[in-house]
Image (cartoon, rainbow, N blue to C red; front, side):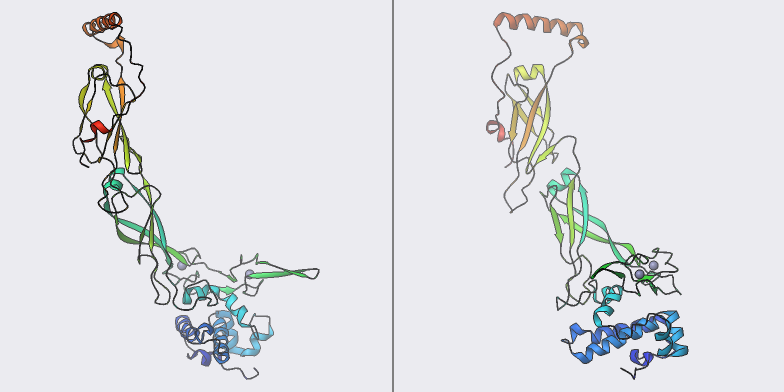
Length: 382
Ligand SMILES: [Zn+2]
Ligand SMILES: [Zn+2]
């Protein structure tokens, strides 16, 4: 290791190369010699290490200036943090950020070979009950993180470079000995980043990332329900190495509806019925989710809380085609008019009614709430 190759030579760039050219050259070298891609070949590992060391110096303005003037001696002398003789593990540790960009996986040391899959993007979408019930198509704007355009993702204002943190020498970790035991903790100076931004990028405030949006047209199938997750394959983040793109996962929320409650494929709605209609029976229109007209027939003596089940007028069933729709449960509410608000003539009629009912012993029915469902069902279509 005495005869070190010139750092510019290692990366194959000229002395006047700019930061972008150096970055590109390093990326190429790193991809070519990466140990994961060379079955652990020691020569490749050595080349990889050299390239990384070269990049570590040449991508840092200060270190590069020192190297240009004094060569390796300048870097090794003044505690400048040149990683002479560090092992590969440390280099990987120091360059997690870079590796996550190059290899797309937070600097993993290649446990999973082969191309990695892109990340999934998750969103929530709130649908009106009707749209969820009968299906709909919507264009969703989905936010995803992308490298900041201004700083190319490195977090530093253009024209400046992040510098290695002096406290932890770029590792992001500090170790303290307590007795015979070493404790490792994230570096307090750089908060574990390993580098310091003297001039953070003004666009991303040093995050290196910014939120972007992509538009995805999503078809929500009829019958989709609260809490369900719709997966749209291949619309997520692209894969880092030409692998499969991730998916978009849409979690469904339902807007509350003033007229209907949904229970799976069944719907419930309330029907206000006048006293006379409840006593005498009536044919009444009922609100439906599909807005198709529907009338139900109430028998004479309909009680409050009476439920009419109309099959086939609920929500289409999601699983399997041709399974039809759930039922609409119509719950009767009997409206009792306020006596003091009645016109005199009507009030008189009600008084007569009271007398007549008392005379005939016609007390309110004591039969419990009934459920007729079946008799009235055939109003429906299914
Ligand atoms: Zn930025
Ligand atoms: Zn630090």
